Amino acid sequence: MFLALPFRDHNPSRRVPYINYSLIALNIIVFASHSGQEYLDSALVFALYPIEVINLNRFETLITSGFLHADLKHLFFNMLFLYLFGDNLEDRLGHFRYLGFYLLCMIGASLIHVFSCILFGGLYNPVIGASGAISGVVGGYFLLFPKAKIDFLIWIIIFFWVFPLSAWFALGVWVLLELWDVYTGSFMYNNVATFAHLGGFFCGLILIFPLWIRLGGTKFWHETGGKPPNPEKTSDNRPVKIPIVRKR
View (tube, rainbow, N blue to C red):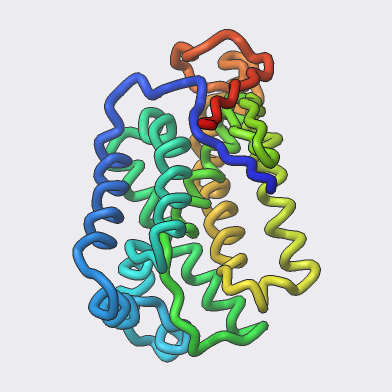
């Protein structure tokens, strides 16, 4: 068994990320507010149906679908990524600009998914999840803080390690995997909105690009070291092995 899971960054936000925490809380509340068939019925009502958007109906689902999740695993991984990458972006943008950025990425990712359905099918399939908006957050983080350190928990069978990886490498690998899904066509069978992920990521890049230019572009990277301007939690960037204690 192999698992690589990002679980913390080295640069916590200087300010309390109220909007990011609120978005996480809202997603959790929506998921926990219903159960079983009742939740499924609600999700199907507020999900994004590409055919409806193409027919110029129910544009509100471009947003409502982004606050619904299929199951606890879907919710957990989305909220983990939002928690990791959203705080420093909110710190840089400010609270309300960050909220606007998040919603624009959500809408952009949804529209790109709709366009992909025109090309590859799936117009009648409902889509839910915050992945597109969170991919936008990842894109913005990737551009502003490419050398920020992200700690990954590596689990191989019964062994655990913690490895710090630069954001440009970890997130770049993720983008390449998404592009590989497109190249191989596996996105049509894996029940994952790959184009929403890629669309959100590039929306985030595009929306943050003017700010990056105003900050100085590559000069901004040199001045900040490509990291958030916050103190690091740890200066030890070596892999750390975590001992395993097993009950007999």
